[in-house]
Image 1: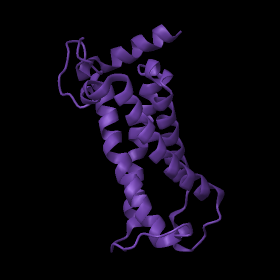
Image 2 (image 1 turned 90 degrees about the vertical axis):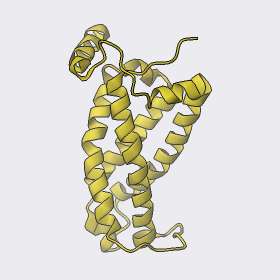
Image 3 (image 1 turned 30 degrees about the horizontal axis):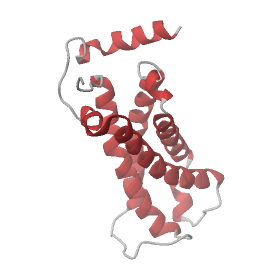
Image 4 (image 1 turned 90 degrees about the horizontal axis):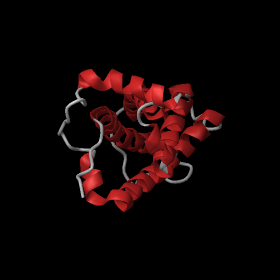
Length: 176
């Protein structure tokens, strides 16, 4: 059986997203625990302005998620037929989108009743479930070889960064 190969642009966008989302999730947990905590708090408090750190992570994640979403809707469209991939992407869009609509002063002022904040909390939970489903789906479909293919540094000819725009253009022509 041939080794799975993932396009390099997918690996790059997926890899950056895979680093940023857990960081956003953890900093969000620290923000929730220190500012809201209606449904429980962590048994410890870490010093620092976690709300600002979380906002910075979200600010970095925003363009990455946008590029990843655009890739998924173009060259990565066949992968969206896997429900776990589509759900993970939708949870990411919901988390980043609702985060962009929030005002960080709401939490500092104890204003927890904003609809957008509730959506952001829901997205926070959905992200955790979606990632678990996504990893489980990858392991079920292709096992460790498929999971390792996302971290591979191997590049095939025609899959160099200079080829990325052509790959997307070809996928748009096929999609018509």
